[in-house]
Length: 191
Image (spheres, rainbow, N blue to C red):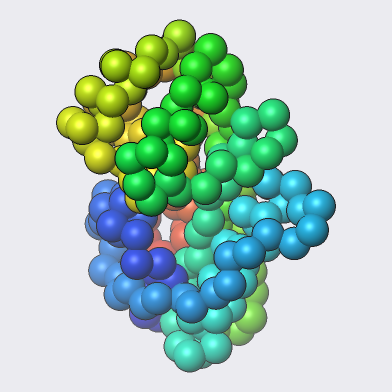
């Protein structure tokens, strides 16, 4: 079987891919993630997932490469990774009592140039949030490297009223249900 490479240095994606029990390597894709003018969030996620896979595949032509990206939006406006406490506070205050949509895409590129791709939509409804409870949450988890300023696999789950998704792993950063199907189609032995 060909080598499998995850075109991402995200520890969250690495931990998710490990669940499938396949050996894989990790390589940084080095892709400009700037949105194009007027680009919708889902389109941005799909474009970046493919660009990341292709960037690594160009350096690793004999491997199967997974690229992935996630774009969060509130009312159509993209939400990036906050990077710091103040930005995370502002994001979560704005999300209070609103829905945030997470578009999580992957692209699997093979040595023969074949591309298998998927896109998942997860909708998260935030409960009413006050500044003090948000600050307590931020101090506890420091989710500054997470789109939307939370970690749903941790304490962040307490910030929500509901999550609507086909694949709970997509919200963490890699839709494993669709990816596992693509890997099986590519010939990998995934249970």
